[in-house]
Length: 120
Image 1: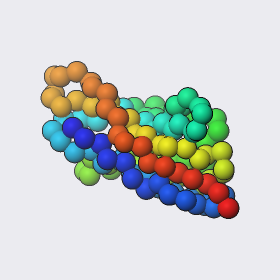
Image 2: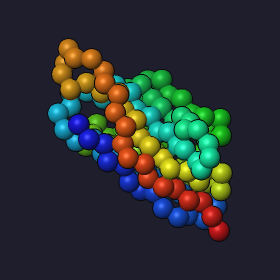
Image 3: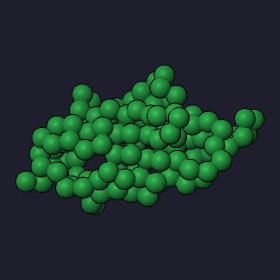
């Protein structure tokens, strides 16, 4: 199983980006999805997460601006980021809890980070 994150880049304050995390490999189900970020000199923090689309969490700092979603058919997870602020600058990581077998355990996987820079 591999996770490939993309979509980062340089954007001006107030702009938007959509991050994409594509999952490849032998997958039975994606149970939990999350996006984390780590700014320079800071600890990695949870930005958004959802459990099969039922329970969704957003950090207070991104509520109303970020949206986590998925395309089940494409095994892809998205993070739509609007009204970006300089303090959103960080490396963003996707994190998935998934099963490779119907009766197997939920395993945790991380994608490589994608850098988001918000600056004028």
